[in-house]
Image 1 (cartoon, rainbow, N blue to C red):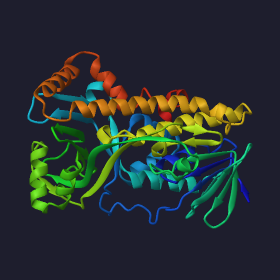
Image 2 (image 1 turned 90 degrees about the vertical axis):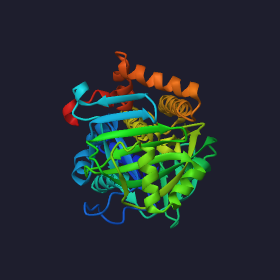
Image 3 (image 1 turned 180 degrees about the vertical axis):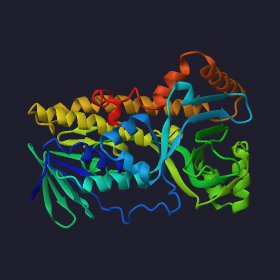
Length: 408
């Protein structure tokens, strides 16, 4: 039987970030992951379809974990502007890094690039043990520790077990934590697109009555990753469309803002479901990332919300351990739970309200949202606040905020 202080179920981006963030705290950490990265990243490979918009707060965390330079060395695309508009209408808002005296607003990075960098880092750390491929088969919660049985019958003990095992978290279900969920009745169609005109490092998002279409700039000036949220039947139809027909519909849906569009990859569809765990913590258990919450991909904030869960939990575990307190006790985990439930609830409510406002072509609603976009774009003081929110600067825990800029 191996004994650890913290066992993390799930070796994705969020679980690995927590493991790396606990290095040097004097705690023994294990990560249990059934699907370790198979091959190292290669720049000659086509862009992966799953990407994230890494905001400034997440970038700061990843820099603190000493993986940001590795991520940029593999493949990351800085975006220096954002544009949002309502199709066939006058509503539009634009953000520019230059106008705010910033070098960039964020980076578009393939999920496997972030994960590979974190996996490589974790594998080099003295206090972190990667157990892979492995799956948790059984968990028994005791008063002072958790007893974990793996699929190969090896047993572990831990003072705290962390669920970072995704939206369909086995650990959350096994702990009988209720889940509130709702079907957005939309599907995201994801693909890589070559555009006639260069994207100029601007992330663009177009709303029309039936859906939301985002073009996220990749490292090639003519390549974008698209996330097209649309009704389920429309997404299924477009996934099966002839390539030329799909390219025509895509170009029209995007108002030909980047000229003609060419499909460069497969088309993958992802049903969109909102989830919110009733508890983010329990006795000797904490939930992180998608295991605790999933949101509409409207603003690409899902992974950033998860990274701020990580940052908050790193700070709490380190503080409690320094003070000699039992960080696995629910009494002490409640500060983490309160803080992150509040952030997730605000994000979920905001995304839902935004989505409902931009859903449909009701003339009154369309006029309201167009006026709202124009006012937000023109009234003083509003855009900096919106940008501050988009960059995650208002959601950082105190310890991360206080890190000097040069630690990035």
